[in-house]
Image (cartoon, rainbow, N blue to C red):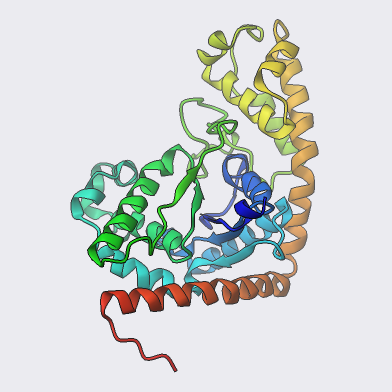
Length: 340
């Protein structure tokens, strides 16, 4: 355990507002367990958020809401460092140096930019294009050894590894930046829309019935699950048949994620039964697990002074580590830095 604890994890969540169960199961739930095994930096990546236009007042509110969600979900500020990315200037400073190390061809291969920019890439912000370099800076400024990643971020972590290796090689500073390893939880499945099992659950979906927010009340959760798309048949008994029904598979993944029960055990429990029975039990489980988190988020949001204090404390701790790294980087690169 002590050897693992010496390793460092960096991860973050964008303050996009209305965090949903996909954010929770795909990221935040894992953060809670990691804090006992690693030195953890959990940031709120507000600089990443502004790659698309934001309302300044809403961005500030959403930043506090992510901090509240972290704490309400079980992340302990005494064990983990919670802070907002923009409050530590070294992220941006290192990102510029990384811009000068990274090759355009590497960035051009990033599929997430193509997905987000779509056909209108000429009008996308340059920040969206170089987003992966800032993500690399987030990781490398703390010399993180491990990064929890989902399928949509694997390519960015591979780029971070390439950047770290190139920096070490270009400046003859072998092992200065560790090559971060991915943490991939094979038990966590990507959570999809409740209306379309082939689309990722997203706040940008126009229908509120496509997702369950961590701020939804119990009656909203029950209603959304009741309306969730399934199939015209009863619950299949074979996993191969379930995989052909993307919406059913998605609901099983959600049920497994919140109940802790293996998917096969759930299939055995509900095979041959109507989906109304399955949905009723799923709703009960979601209400039981989400309601305490929802209540705590709302309570914490009423205490802005407390949340700002947590972020300030986190900023101080993060800045202490980040300053040392960026000072070393300046020296390695050959930039003069007068510290007063």
